[in-house]
Image (cartoon, rainbow, N blue to C red; front, side, top):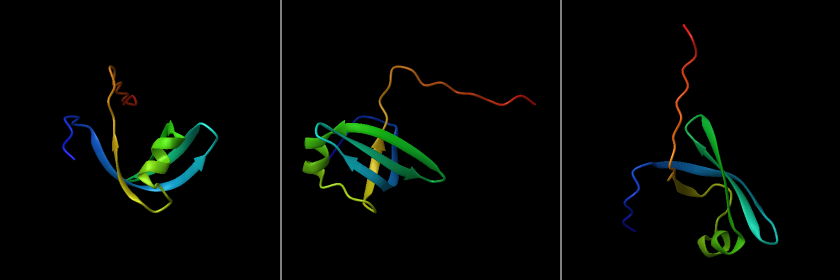
Length: 70
């Protein structure tokens, strides 16, 4: 599937909690965890489960950068 978004990070599903309406998905990207809330239907259509290899696609109007002082 082609996608124009440039911020695509490969990772592994670490945890998924499916509720009545939404699903909370935690993906390990390197040493970091990225959390996302998606619809229950989307999670079910993707067949998401722990251990799945996925891509986290970040699309935002703002990206902040912090650097610790020297």
